[in-house]
Image (cartoon, rainbow, N blue to C red; front, side):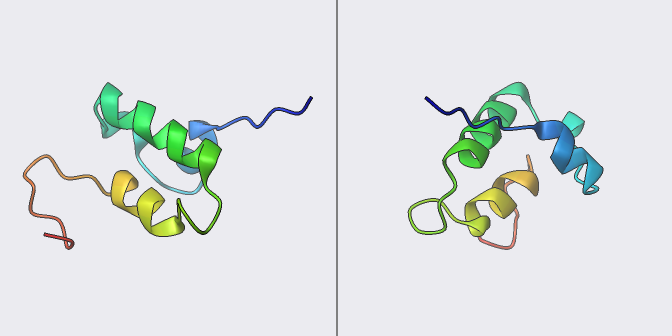
Amino acid sequence: MSYKIASLRKLEERGIDVARLPFSIRILLENVLRNRDGFAITEEHLDTLTHWDASGTGPWM
């Protein structure tokens, strides 16, 4: 059996401020990291969560 660890610390090392994200978004972010396959879950999903904006005025709006 193999395991895949989703480390939010690795994102912080890449300069992403994970601490500013609400707890619920961090949970979703961990799930995206764990299940990212380049097809169903892509880098775009990861980018959307890491750049989450509480005002709802992100570039995808």
